[in-house]
Length: 541
Image (tube, rainbow, N blue to C red; front, top):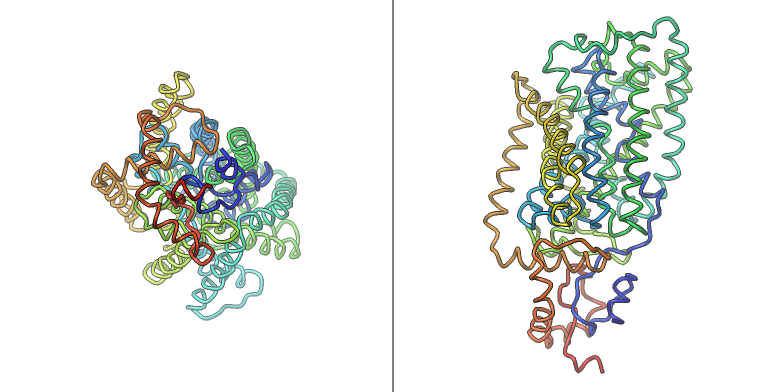
């Protein structure tokens, strides 16, 4: 019991303690940290410059209409996050949700889709800043240009700053987001309101006409990208082990963050469209920094420059948040013994997944560089952001379709919230995914191909994983949920009955090894996925 008490309080556990799996340190993040984790991922100012611009590239003057579709779809998708987070708390996020619903195989598949999604959010953010935003705002604000390949150095500097803050720990990251995020929300709303007031008679309801988009397929792609821009609320799911009261605070944070930012985005999409001129929106995305141009046109140069700083900060947080989320999901995989080697579950003294964070930062730099050189920074950004959105919503579809199974097992099934709403949300997202493939678009065609290949490989990998490894992952996962105070009905309740025997067998098999390692524990890497941290019963005396 003493060992369990230490684990629940997230203190350092003595190597002679009973064998157990540990979690990330619980209770260090309050409600507003969770709220701004979502807001930072959504990144209003950054998305205005990046994702909203790419959505306008397809929607043209119907950009506000695309956001109406996105908000409807996002509200339906949010339903799944809220209901799952009431029961399951884990650093694995949606991987853990599906794992708890139907077991490790489809949990693995869902998790791999979210890893692809968040990885590419980091990629498109750093490529956008270095290759699209910087040259655009320098030309807009000063009329100057710089060397063609200078974006590479800017991109490297940007990811380095992101990694440094991630290395300092999640609490530092979220304290920063908390301080800056409130100001960003208020400032963006105030500036957009000022633009709408100054537009005057140019305010119009024509922007809600979908026929302003070039084709129906374009409005579908625009809706998908718009949906992606307001979907960052899901990032808070990956802080389930670090929140004070995750099963209460995470659902509330998701609802509040999504509602706040969805309304702000709709407001911004309308203000920027009428401010630019809805009949001229075909040139909106081509200007690279259209939002800055609109605010500079209707307000002042000072506001324009300040908006540049705010966008850079938002893009910084918009890349930092998915980096943290992706690293934590990889850490959860490694802890459960799936896909990634054990070294990815190493944590530092601050209990941050330091190895997985470093690997994600390094690989995102390489992939972004390749995409920018091969396709050009803007097209590379479009390709990465579309791939991220496709992977994210394939993962959401898997989570949607397993929610009913999960609550059926709990004997708490509500057909409307647990079955009908998730199915409708999946259908809407499915239509948007389809229209990214048809008709043919040379820039986005590769996106469903990469996403499809990743999905197929994930399915093959999940079904080739040996049964004993899946069983071991199931036991580890359920132990973590027990430590988090989970009370839901397990997928394989027979594991609970055999747990005592398994732990005793493991303890006996590894007692001599762990007794030796106990003497060197201060010099060894700190593996949070150390299933056996015990030694012989004699060591307790």
